[in-house]
Length: 475
Image 1 (cartoon, rainbow, N blue to C red):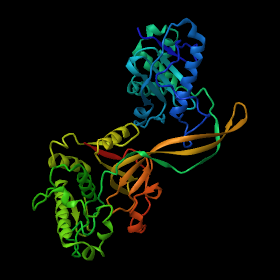
Image 2 (tube, rainbow, N blue to C red; image 1 turned 30 degrees about the vertical axis):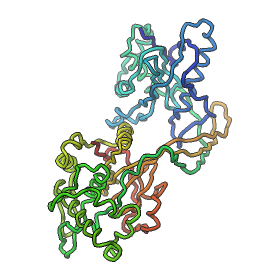
Image 3 (cartoon, one colour; image 1 turned 135 degrees about the vertical axis):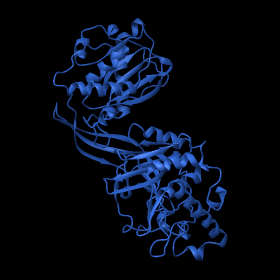
Image 4 (cartoon, rainbow, N blue to C red; image 1 turned 90 degrees about the vertical axis):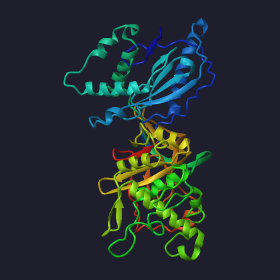
């Protein structure tokens, strides 16, 4: 039978004894980093350091009896927290509350606190595995019980029972009850914090997958309806984003249009990384060959065909067009019923961002959309990422002792590559959680040299990609 041991304030400390000889050693305890970018989240490196320290202490006490052998390696680390409950709007539990560490070959797991106000280690086992999703659900239930006028006492009653009588399923409830209780540990206070620039790790880069820089204006809108003043309407920007996405996936096998189907390689030189400067209103006619102009017309026909597939509605008085995102999902399925058979609209949040990276790892760019309140909505294609890090220095006050210390650590993150479908403007790398035109970290090499920033046309709206209105199309 699997044995569970918990380290909770209300329990005596019970932990398994084992020889601490890991196949993949856990990292040593870091130099007391206390926060990651001014948050209360414990960095995973620090949490693993706490686990390492506990196991070392156990090994020193029990190594002589040889009762257990913990020679094992980490199989996976999952994040658990209040994301499920938070979406209901009834509480403000953090999404990151615990790290669930499952060891390989079913040789046990550990549950570690991921908030400064929580215990460092909640559970360690010698066998079995733990499901972070089930802990999410238990945390949501525990928070609802905590808000009841008459608190639920089941967990208190369970405290007095042997753990073998509680059962594995109730262990989720027991841990959740402990995590949503009032904080027991007073965390340190950050007095000052400085950090260096984000440095990309060029050895861990995916993309950019999309190699073209198209837009919704001239010459790409040559096949849209005519406005009241005799000009072509601007393309529905969603059609531009999907077209750029398809230029990478090359699905369907040919680019369709009302005039016929075109091979994708006809479009590879049209406003790509090196030629986009030629595809402006003033440069197009004189700098683009007759052959490429004919191919640009084919591309315009294809873009107009996407408008039809997505049931775009144009207003000839304003020259703008739009289509509901649900129509875009259905349009993808109609364009290629096999490749896009599983296309679906997904909320972009902490709990689903893993799916975004999985898609990019599979060489699939992702149609993404975000908004600023109810006033402005835009779309873009997320087509790559790179891991990055920066140096952080903190001056920290520890209230319990009144002492201060200077701590140094390295913060890890990822930058996503975004293509906004605006002829290269604002394309580049953005920190994972910050989708804001004004906060681009790195530009594409040729963009700023060839395309001036046009702030009067594209002001720096802040776009927060982690709220209820942000979505992505996975396929």
